[in-house]
Length: 568
Image (spheres, rainbow, N blue to C red):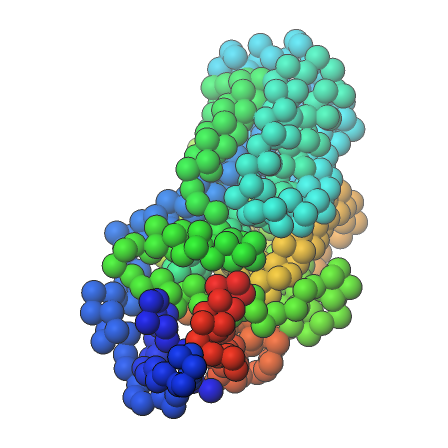
């Protein structure tokens, strides 16, 4: 069968087949044999393929991604909040004794204690100390409750983002705002606990919704770069709260966190819904309008729209059981889960804690506090590198290179610590190894994990699969955070880094075999790759092309076919 082309409305795709219409006795339109193949430029002389990846061409897609970045920036404020806040919340005796073992982002906790003790920080920080004090155990739970809340948020995110990816981000603002207000006004530790847990729920929702939204609005030529905005926002948030902590008390930081929630909520109101979600809701006309808005009027959006529709028409409905049993979802779920495990279990949280100490030992004139800020700034700069390189080098190459360099950096730290026993003579080598490790993480596996979350799952299973990965991510973060210092006390820094290096080695081998390169492929082609052929993009493209053609094929005639196209 060829394609039906109606006189009132013509739908084309790249390299589309030009059709003719011939009337029959009863006046119906029938399908005829294709006569010749024409290129898109012939069909639409003013329409150009969206191959240019310059910001001016994709400015509205970039703007939409940056709004999602505001929500993760607010999440970074949450993750980094305890670093400057906990030393002022701890009792004076506890502050001098703490070992920065309170939460995931403890890079600057101990340096803050030193600054507080010396009186080098702004008085607004110490003014908060008289209102609320925590024990070390309470401080530990304050850091961890964010992760537990994120696990719960990730669980409910499947249902929330099925109502709309944009709506999911909007919905996340309520528990986050309430949580920040509770912390800013806290008079006892239980208000702090409640606020921290509620903000964690919000973080879990956003980490599922934001990558999916970005992948569904971005053109394939820049999808990887825009997806890196998720991690970039987190790192910028951590860096910002670390700097503000020098001048603002923990209540002021909580108020600033609440302000960021209002900003990203208002900004999200002005971006469109995901066209993929609109098609899933049978709103093809709205999806066409969104694509035209995002790509620009000079771009023919019908091809992109037909790709989305063909994926919807030919897909199955996934139950939770199907997610872990059907090949089309199990394979990408396993691949992304593996990357997530390597991400969380490769020692990043430990090294980011010790990196400031290494730098201070190597350059004593640099205080540990400013060394810690230098580390967080390095994370931001490296993530910008990921934005610039992920669509040029590809996800797979960047991921494997990142893991390999991380493993090398960990092995170097282990050798230095084992040989010098933490002495100053090996500090320069250790700090260089730690810097290389942090840079490799921030330019590779850190942001690429969220790129894969957004683009590797089938359209119908994307909400459930993203929720599973988000739960896994935050659960591992909680476990690693709670067990790290016990592990380090048993094996030492050298033994711990050796273990993390082993994780990188195993991760590198398995990633080589299970993670494909998705650069430049549409979401429909990626889905077809896992559904039909695990080892051939050629087969995947062919299957997806057949699916694309099928949306306009019809046995009953032109008008019925057109109505079928509109309803599918």
